[in-house]
Image 1 (cartoon, rainbow, N blue to C red):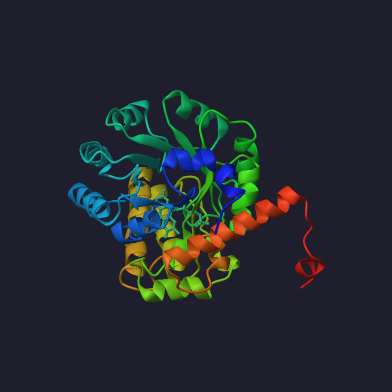
Image 2 (image 1 turned 90 degrees about the vertical axis):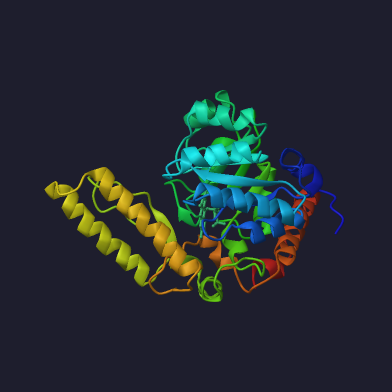
Length: 347
Ligand SMILES: Cc1cc2nc3c(=O)[nH]c(=O)nc-3n(C[C@H](O)[C@H](O)[C@H](O)COP(=O)(O)O)c2cc1C
């Protein structure tokens, strides 16, 4: 399809990423390995490898494997709170990964400097405006804002609110929007507010090229938006980061574990930090059980509310084509001031 509007609308994002389309597939632990990442980049999007809790030598191998499968740009996502984080930075520097994403918490100025010294472009997640300003000062080249409609670990604010806060005020670096995006039409809306591009995760889980277990994909296809719910923190003495996932027995296991650990923290049997580490270990293990082993009952089905738009297993090419076509159509409609047909308003 020839693009009349999109090329201009996401030029800043596509130029920054060096891609045909400013559509990123955000890193997903256990899911975003070399097959999915290279397929996304080969189809004109931007794939991001998930460093997660990988042993550093495995991360190096995944970067090499991705390079073998695509000649197009891709990124590596590092979780600042992961036990191997410092080693992971050394790996991306040594392997000269072209784009490094810092997730989990706010990276230090030194982390950013270290990654950039190898020539990489650095992208950080910004939860609030004041931190965005600091990250820009420290040299981040772009930002991702991720609303709490997203799958996995989430912040407290909706994508629509973050978009207004950031896109209308921050102009220094490109901003990519994530969380709850399931259609090209929605991408067009964020582009019209000034986004450089969009990051999706949930919709790409069911890609043919994704190695996730068929039962994991099936659970996504069956789920409605309202099935993808965030966890709650029971008590501030054991702070937990909410995780959005499709409700199952695994969600109840998490609640039971949280209660058990909370009692231990309160009685002084374990420290708050030990409790938090155990909760995070639960997620890594539970996500692996669901994604790799296909245990969709007790494993974790991390998914965004955008699971509403997951209808079938599709090749990456088809998913990207749908997104691009929808975004172009919406931008054309907006440019021509054409109101939607009556039939579209009242089905
Ligand atoms: C199964 C799953 C695992 C994820 N793991 C990570 C991760 O390891 N690091 C990260 O920064 N984001 C992670 N995310 C968030 C995605 O990268 C992406 O930003 C998010 O899925 C976008 O929102 P959406 O789910 O509505 O598409 C994960 C999301 C899912 C669904």
